[in-house]
Image 1 (cartoon, helix red, strand yellow):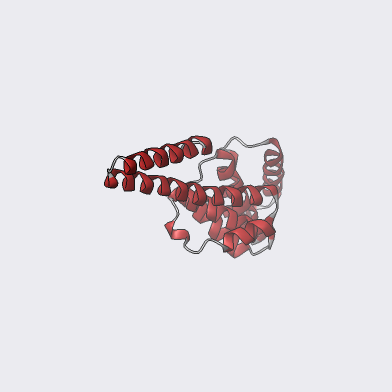
Image 2 (cartoon, rainbow, N blue to C red; image 1 turned 90 degrees about the horizontal axis):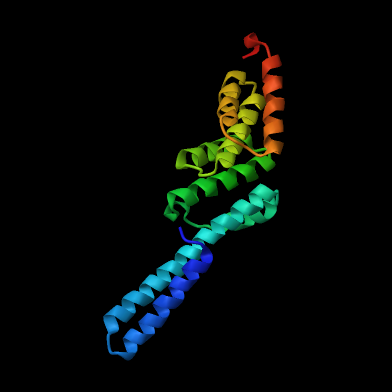
Length: 176
């Protein structure tokens, strides 16, 4: 996907060439260019909404993230990447509300749809490990924590992962 400035330039070029086509009595190429420009604008708006929701969820502004999530009426119409981050944000909001069942389902969906950033995959796996740990399912928690440890993460998350690793090592196997 192109950066926003490049997409904006494409829209301007499509509009300018479309207008020129109309002035030269070439209606069909002009209509096609306006449609392409419209699709670019639509893609920009829908993509940026997901990016905005993601930024709110990551920064901890869960109220704004949840409000923006409610504005999305048909998540199935989003691209696969957008659906991944849609479910990731929903999972983060659910974790904040301690709705662990919903959070686990949403974070699993986010991983299945294919989060792109290694850090996001690690965060999703870490939170899944926390969920299963809170449910006293230590074996499953260990599996998700091991998955989270495979990815390169920022130092703060790495610290949390190491702390949970120590806690899981201290649990007795018969408790699992």
